[in-house]
Image 1 (cartoon, rainbow, N blue to C red):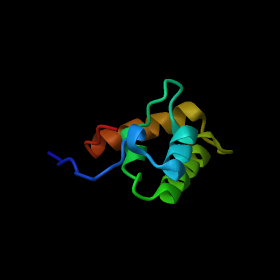
Image 2: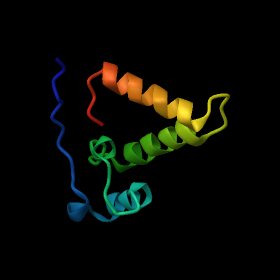
Image 3: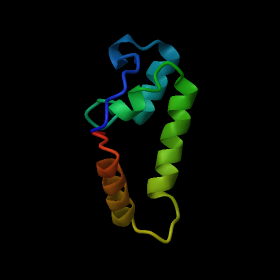
Image 4: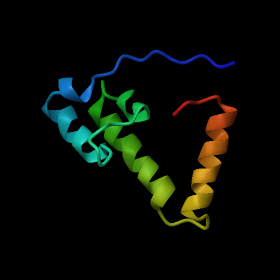
Length: 84
């Protein structure tokens, strides 16, 4: 069984101006920021770059449909015992 990594993160309510701006761009409609993104909070540019990579991979031009890409992500996460 996989172990959860412990990574220090900055919560949205404690973010400085630069991080708060990035959090504003990546937040869900309800204002929450996914855990998988918050683990990059110590490096706001990395967080922004990770989010852009995700958007390109999941919503960019591809021979796979969005549903197919989501299914692949679920299977990979399950195999990796990833709770994100």
